[in-house]
Amino acid sequence: MTTTITILFFGIAYGMILYLISVGLSVTMGLMGFVNLAHGVFAMLGGYATVTFMNRFGVPFLPALAIGCVLVAALGFVLERTLYRYLYGRSELDQVLFSFGLILVSVAIVRIAWGPLAQPIHLPGYLRGEVKIFDIALPAYRLALVGFGTVVITGLWFVFERTMFGARIRAAVDNRAMAQSIGINTSRLFAAAFGLGTGLAALGGGLGADVLAIAPAYPLQYIIYFLIVVAVGGLGNIKGPFVAALAIGLADTACRYLVPAAGSIFIFAFVFIVLIWRPNGIMERR
Amino acid sequence: MAAVPSAPPAYVALPSAGIRLLQLAPWLLVACLPLVLPGYEPLATQVFVMILFALSLDLLVGYAGIVTLGHAGLFGMGGYAAGILSVHGCTDPILTAACAMILAAVTGVVFGVAMLRTKGLTLLMLTMASAFLLYEIANKATGLTGGEDGLQGVSFTPVLGLFAFDFRGKTAFFYSLAALFLVFTFVRALINSPFGWSLRGIRENDARMAAIGCPIMQRRVIVYVISSALAGLAGALQAQATQFVALHSLSFELSGNILIMLILGGSGRLYGAFLGVPTFMLAQDLLAKQDPANWFLGLGIILIALVMLAPGGILGIAERAVNAVRTRSSR
Image (cartoon, rainbow over all chains, first blue to last red; front, side, top):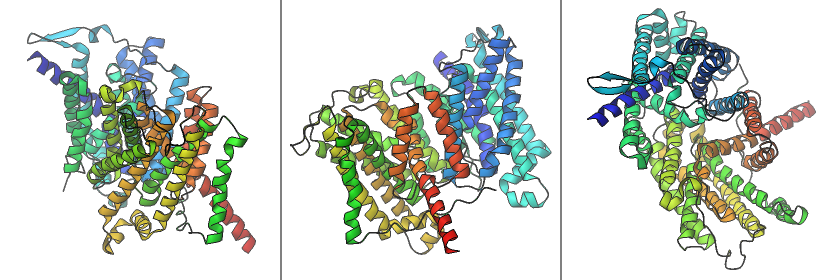
């Protein structure tokens, strides 16, 4: 019983982190059709920013998180305007190579600036320890992850479904030429969406610093998980990746607990089966 | 907008008899290398193996237009196949290399049939996942593969019963050079065959190829299997030359690196692998010794610059230079 709840709980917390990081990738890929392998870079930078502001400048956890999020969103915006947008029409191979190059550069810079070791995060007191709910002790950090994730996802849903900005994005995903011809400035929209996506990734990276360790190899090590979430969830929407992230978080956690000898073998096999059954993701619209 | 990359040249000519003899010259020159640069045989062997590996990737990326980020999965598969066979007593190098090719080809059939029905991001992700899957299996099956420590105790009997693998690496040098020559000849014939032309057609426009009756899925799977077998051969040669199989041979890093080596030289150009691999490996040998961070930084910047400014790699730059000179002189 306790094991089941632990797995459920840890799996959902992990899924929330995966979702926060990957949702921006899903939206930008759906919008611009850009294969951005370097998305994990922004999550890593968010993590480094959070940890650095906390450890070196003594900023509390939540403000540090916010600073990291804003800084990385700004960086994403600038990179979109200066580099990414010149590659939208290019071949998939060019996009893959470009983003792989970006990964290498970021890995090198981070290694030079912070060294090769993982950065420890010192969580504030209220996030350490455990909280008792119905006689089951749950770690406060993961509880906060779930709570925080829920808030962000609700906000994101609101922006996407109930604001003009969200409506524009949905219109551009569906039919870019048509959206442009009714007066939506898609170029500016892309930059804004890219900034938003990278900011969310930074938030996920900072929040999840205790789950996905902040080290130079971060973008190479976890990229496959972010891509899985996007591929399984489908491009250009925010619901699909949510279901996919939770499913993958739960499945991966369950596998690690129940069959530690198999590691993540099952998860990759599972993803293969899902994508052969539904090549365009589980939320495919017809 | 950046310039649209020009299409690679459509045709690599099959030479006439006289020129064909002349084309053997570079191979003979390279075969004389141990006389000039003794002690560099192991590095040269590494280069040959990687060129062979990059050639197999060029069939997919350059000719069939299938971008894969998991080609190391098949390379490692070949390496482990050869290594595990040798540990269990089957130590003839050519026989184990053949077995490794068959096993890699079978893996290629399984993954290829499953993956090649998808395209775009999904295909890219599945190629990555396939290599991650094999990596995890090799990592966890420590009894068979040695896990993270790599497979040790690999050794092979002399090639053809005549040439023993020596510690200076001379046998491995000539053995892998010979294998590379055979594979190169095969790949050149393949890409000039009607099959090779249909691959280019599929790369350029698969809907039209389907409309003129080309079985696209079948062609893509076939080229994937051929490429898998060649990648497996490269892995087996690596295992035989180094008498060791590392877990790294299945890694995402290697999948990425081999793609970079190919692109650096120029993909879809047959000779790109021969330029890109030595350039990459020499630079790595020089730079990574000091600090891996510098190497990553340099490589990343080169990669971004290559995509933004010089699509087509070294050969692409050379082609444009030649074209520029031609147009000027014809004026």
